[in-house]
Structure formats: C-alpha cells, structure tokens
Image 1: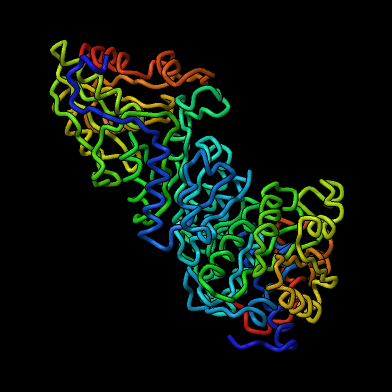
Image 2 (image 1 turned 120 degrees about the horizontal axis):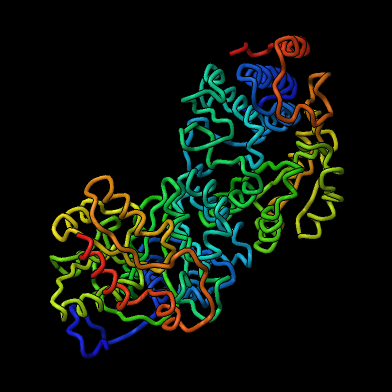
Length: 283
Length: 322
C-alpha cells in the first residue's frame, strides 16, 4: 500500500470510527472506548508507516509486523485491516456473530488475514512480538515489529518479564506502544492500580522511551512514530508512550472508562455517527 | 529382583531421559537450521548446554520468566522457527497454562514445550516441583499433542520426531537415571502405540518411566502363569485408540500405569476409549489425588505404588473382574 498523506489519513480515521461504532452497536457488545482512542495510531501504522502486504502470509518475511496485545480493541483493528485490503469491509458486519472470522478477541483459529496470534488474555503480546523481532534478526530481515499494549495491561507481570528480556537481548527492531489513556474497566488507573511513572519505569528497564503527547492528533502520531523508527537499530528496544483519550471522536464518549466495554443504543449511535463524516462508504 | 527375572527387555546402561532430550535437541538442531532453543535458567538441568554451545545464535536464555518464554516461543514461530522451550514440568505447564492456552494452543503455533523433572522421580525437591497434573492440563488443550517417552533412547527419538512434526507439542521427561531398554535406532511414530510384549490375559498400558516397571511386571506375572501384554503409550494425545481396543478385545481387561494423578492422566483417556467402545475392567496405577513429598525416587515410587509390584496386583485384580 502506498503511503497516504495526512489529509487522507484523517478521512480514513473518520470512517474507521464509524465502522467501530456500527460494529459494536450491531451486536450490542464489544469495546468502543479504546478502539476510538487508538484510531489515529492504527490508521497511521497501516496507511502510512508500515510496509505490509494485504495478501496475507503468516511468516510476514520482509514486512513490518504488528501485534495487538490488548485484544479487546479488536473493532479498530478489524476496521483498519478491512479498509487496507486484508478482507472485504462487508465482513465487518459479522463481528462477534456465530461462525464469524471476526471473533470478539482476535484469533488465528478462523484464519482471518492479518492476525498472527490470538490475544485477549492480557500481557502476552509483547512477548510474542519480541520473539518475532528476534527471528527477523536471525533471518536478516531488516523490517520492524510493532506491538500495542493497554496502560491497564501494565499491571500484568508478564509485561515486565518481557520488558526486562528485550533490553537484555538488545531487541532494537521493536517499537512497543502503550495506549496511555489512564482508564481501565473499573475506573481511572490511578484509582484501580496506580501505574506511577511509566516513562521512568521503562527507561529503568533499559528501553528508549518517547512520548507522543497528542495521540489523537494525526500529525503528532506520525511524528512520534517517525521518531520511534529513528531510534531503532541502536541497541535498545523502543517504547512509545501514546497519550490518548478513550472514546475520542464522539463527544459523549470521550475521556471516561464508562465506554470501555459497552455498546451505544440506537439513538446514541445516530448521535455519534452525526459527528463523524462517512468518507469511504459505510460497509 | 531384575536379575533373577526372565525379562523380555533388558538393559546394560541407565541414563536420565532428560539427557535423551538434550542429545535429541542437538541432533534436531543439526538436521534443521530452524530449530531454536529457549531456557528459563535451567540449561544444565535440561541438558541444553550442548545445543547452546553449538548454536549460540539459535539459543535464548530467558531467565526465570516462564510466561515470557512461552510467548517468545510463540512469536518465534512467525518467521518459520521451531522453538523448543525448556524448564521443569511444573513451570512448563501449571505456571504458564494461560500463555500456552492462548499464545500456543489456540493460536496453533509450532512450539515444542519440553518439560523435565516431571512426576515423583524428581525426588528430594518435594511436592512443589513434583508435578503430577501436567498431562491432564496439556491433553485438555485443543491442538496439543502430548508425549511421555519411557527411556533415554525413546526420549531422544521423540525429540527428533517432534521437530519434524507441525503443531504444538508437550514433551514430558524426567530426572532420574533409568534403564535404557529400547533400541537406539528406533523410529518414533507420534500417535502410534508400541506393542512391546504380546500376551493374552491382561493388557498393561504404560507411559514414561512406568513402561520399565510394566516390563518387569510382565515377567513377574509370567512366573505365576499369567500372560500379560505390554503396550508403550508414549503418545497420550492423540491416543492410539485402535491399538488399545484391539488389545483389550483379545485380553479382556487392562491396567494403566503412569507417574501422574489418576485424575486426568493416561488411565482416564484409556477409560474413555473403553467405555465408549468396549467396556472392560480397567485398573489404575498412578497417584491417587495427593501431592508428592521429599524422598529418593525409588522410595517415592514404592510409597505411592508406582512400581512393578503394584502393576502385578492391579493386573490380578483386573483379571478377577473379567
């Protein structure tokens, strides 16, 4: 896929948000909050940053790879995969329904193109991404591996096992991103289990850490990803602390954990879609 | 006792099955450049040192972080590698069940989970390390193949065979020095039971270290005029149901023998097979709903009834129930 310019990326983001809301509304289940919050990040990766082939191959040799560790934000990933050609956008209407390839959480069992490992039980994606990155080195494949985690997910112990490992083994072809929206199911992270200073923690483990302060501003997201890329290949894994707002793009959903895992009603959907331009055609 | 019995299989040397794994891994690594090794700070215990030395660029020290090790291995299959993870059986299964379930089994990744120090025969370390539930946990997972070879040679052959097999595998072996009674040049066929001794009165289905005890038990039974058939079930899943049913059709009853809990072990799988096809008396030799404890392997096998004498008793009981 050709690199899409900024204006086009913004348009795609609007359509992706419509897809997310319509998917979740149709089955009255799923996770719209962080899907909306990470829309710019996904669109930037798949339509501008990554070299990837929508003619899907599990091994992904000579491609950049993406892993989603916080699998519950599958709606944004499915939309972006469909809109970038991995499968028909029409298939989005099967999300979370019986016999669908679009499982509630991403899976390989149904052979959905674009998915390389199941996720949903949190804390596991970074390990898999590191493994894939190390294999790229062995195979002398100079493409990068990306992984996205949630901030609440940082409470899982396995994340820190993997964090320690990647620095020790100098896995510097890896860009991990944390969706830093400061919300989790039961409330703000500072109330549920305070993450304290993630930047200091990851740096102390030996990572190069950058912050993208405006994670819902496409220009800032691109800038952050470019910067992260420029820091690869220097002996350290790279972390991108992406400040986002859960529910971004819909005025009544933004900035609260309440839309983590609930679907909009008919009226709420109509209201939300009124705030988002249909740019690529609804599925 | 072994010396005076007329055994159908004998041995001149004893060795630990984990060394069979280490030597098999080295050989698999030589044959296939995609084989990679990962270990969670137990290289010596797992006998992975030779592989590490010969293929340092294909070996990954993970430290004491088993969950990460399973995830790394799953990720390494993407790009075509065949990862072999190594740690104790306890830390290879119970500690990382969810990681195996989601990242390996559900994702159908070509990871070989290689687990040493399984069962009571780990000995003095005691029950924290003596896992007796691992086979049950692993066999419940869809896509997972479960293998428990019986001696050094079979473990080496199994290790090389799983490198050639596509799909997640749990390979279970142990710490104690154990008779080498199977041939060095054996062909290991995953999922294919091995008829070691023909008999007519009772079938002994054994796996892992208990296969040797079954060989001894057969000779003891023969001295008493009882003809026992011994079948080596090295692959617990997929289970060779045809071989099991054919044997029990002939003998009319059976004994299962394993270094594992009765709940969820080989005996359970055999019972399911029999009950659905040909209900017949089945007696179990295994650990009955208890944890282990510290002791020498021989003392523990005796205390928990995992030896030839108990297989003989179980065989007689099964025959009496016919």
